[in-house]
Image 1: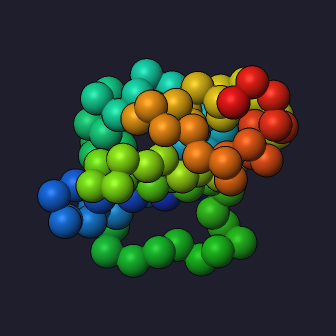
Image 2: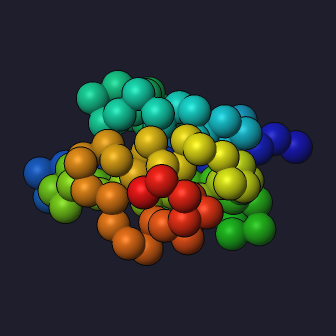
Image 3: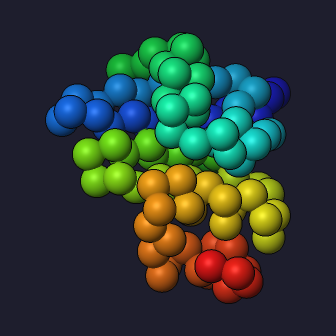
Length: 105
């Protein structure tokens, strides 16, 4: 039971892998404040050394400071927060238009 999520943080060439039993339920909301707050939040989750079994993972994010990129998936549908998360680093990449429903990017 739960809403399991992975948080991956890439910064200065170092990769951190974290997991939360309940994180996928509101993953997009936890990321909305931007990388300055979302990165420490991700690092406060349980640090893990391996990926969870794929069918159990309901959400995940990559916070990549080196490439200035955010990638995520979760069950939030066409929620507007996708657009806000895509603009974290000031770079709304074209492939995120599909995630955001193609509106307002």
